[in-house]
Image (cartoon, rainbow, N blue to C red; front, side, top):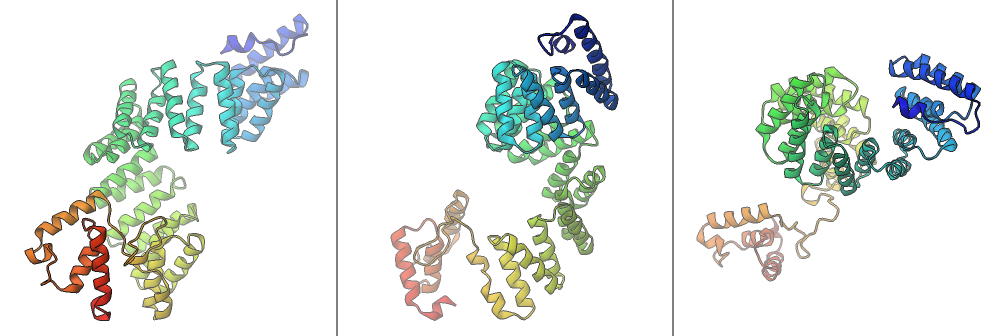
Length: 436
């Protein structure tokens, strides 16, 4: 990198002695920078810019230093000034893209990373950064293509293999994701994020034991990897090891207590299952302190309050939640239960019931308004239950109770539409006694 920096002239018409002095000053500044003495480096860059405000390398490296110090707005301004001097630098376009990314200007970041890769097609860092922003924007197929380009340029970049695997997993291509993570581990066996991401892919593949082992290996390689400990907790809870899951969540929280509201929420869920309600409520409160708009935590806390008999508090929490999330069907149902417990029968009746949850886009039977059970799993279950019924019920013969025949045939996905209409009509014809 030094040869690239010092081989560039900041302005075309500079005296030989001035150029030599400028290079020496830049060498000193860059030595401070690479040694981590950022204050001294910034002061040295400012001295160079005081003598030459259009010094490209000083402007660019001031921007890089500002990024390292967490000042993306200042970094963007400095690198923009550098590109105004010389727009041909792929490295400066990459730095500006990173500044825009941190500012939340994702479209501008993508444009800068694309400009960097157009000027330097084999620039692996810019391709990697481009893939990350595309993934952040939900443009997953483009992100996959970008990560594959990184690996074509630098096959030994384990970080790119991990990002490729995570993106493939989001796309539902679990087998490819597992292969990518295993390739990353083959490149860097002690790379904890690769083991952690492999665990997530294995979980999605239904291999819970292998997933837990992978996440535990991630913790062994990096005990301070908070997400790995969090995922260990999730997997232990899923396998029914509640005390161990609580310990894993607490270990994740201890690493950085204010970083992950989800860890506090999940710890609260585990403590609730263990019967430690007050501790669970304290965890929910901590999660909401970190993430006040965390709807799932509000719902969990409100439901626990209702179960503990604190109905007024539960109702107030649920009303606030529904003001922000009116489409949250479970919250409507819980609010109805809380109101019913408070003696507000009219208010409870006004809430949607469990059978009328507000699920946008879910089709319903036009005759009786039941929800058709169309998933393969439910179809198989319906057929299995039919085979296990008595002979008279399987055929829905005339000896079966009319009310039962109507309900069973209307909700059974294996029944033809014509028979659905017939049984729905029969149900209505039975009058109030058949609706029970």
